[in-house]
Image (cartoon, rainbow, N blue to C red; front, side, top):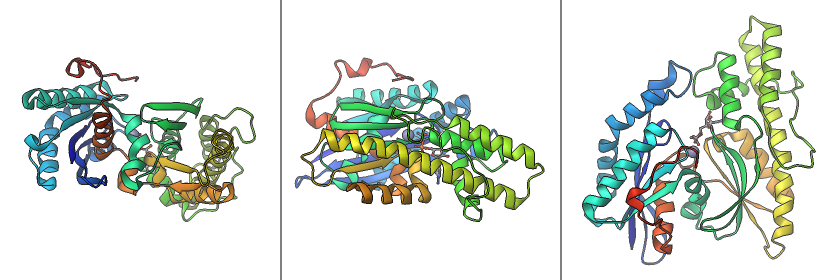
Length: 343
Ligand code: KG4
Ligand code: ZN
C-alpha cells in the first residue's frame, strides 16, 4: 500500500488529504478536507491574494491535522508528501509548498511538487480508475482548456481560451448583475427561473476551424443588454443569466465537439473513448447535461468526478503525487523546488 499526504493552497481553498493505493491496486481517498475562504473574500467580489496567503498560514496546520485524523493515520505512515507548486497565487504556493518541504525533510520522506493542472487531469483515475489515453476538458476560474492526456506527464494542450476562462466569465457576469460571489453557482441558480431565448447573445467561436474558446465578448454583450434595461428587475436578471448560460453552453459544446473529432482520428483503436470534465465549472448542471448529450452523439463516455472533487481539493494533489512517486517521476532535488506561479 502506498499512502500520500497532499497539500493544496494555490488559490482560495486551504486543503489537505490522504490518498492510498491498496495492495489490490484500488485507489482510495482516506480523507479530503477543504476549508474554503469564500467568506473572507466575498466582500471584495473576488480572491484577494494577500488575504488568501494569510488565511492559508493560519489554517493549514489544522487542516493537515484534520486530514490525518480523518484518515486514521500518522505522518510517519506516509510514503510521501505532495504539495501544489503551481500554477497559482505566489503567496499561497509558498505557504503550502514550504510546509510540505518541512514535513518531508523532518520525516526523511520524498516530497512531490505537483502541478495543480495535473491534479485536475488525473482525478478521473482516482475516482473512476480510468486508463490512459483520454481527453480532458478543464473548466475552472483560471483555466479553460482541452488536453490530450496520453500518459503520466504526457499532456498536449489541444485548445485553450484566447481571453477569459469560463469560470471567470461566470464570475464577471455575476458581478455586473450584482449577484453574490462566487459567480458560477449564483448565475446557475438565477438562470433556473429565466428564459434563455429572451436575449440572443453570440455563440463565440462557433463553427470556427481553430479549436479554441473565447468568452469575453459574451460578457460584454451581457453588460450592454443589462445597461440598456437598467434598473434590472429580478426577472431581467434571471433572463440575462439563462441567456448567458445557454450561449456559453452552446459555444462550449461546439468547441468540445471539435476536439472529440480529433481524438477519434488520433485513437481509432478505442471503442468508447472517454471525455473527462474537471474544474469548478463542471459543477454546472446545464453544462454537464450538454456534455452528456454531446458524448452520446459522438460515442464517447463522459466521466465527471463527484462535485466535491471537481473544484479545488487536495485529494487530487495527493493522487498526482502518488502516481509520480510510484512511477519514480520526481524532480531532482525536490526540496529545492521553487514555486511556479505560471507553471
Ligand atoms: O476549479 P475551481 O474550484 O478553482 C479554480 O479556478 O482553480 O473553479 C472555480 C470556478 C469559479 O469561477 C466558479 O464561479 C466556477 O468555478 N463555478 C461554476 C459553478 N460552480 C463553480 N461555474 C458555473 N456554474 C457552477 N455551478
Ligand atoms: Zn483548480
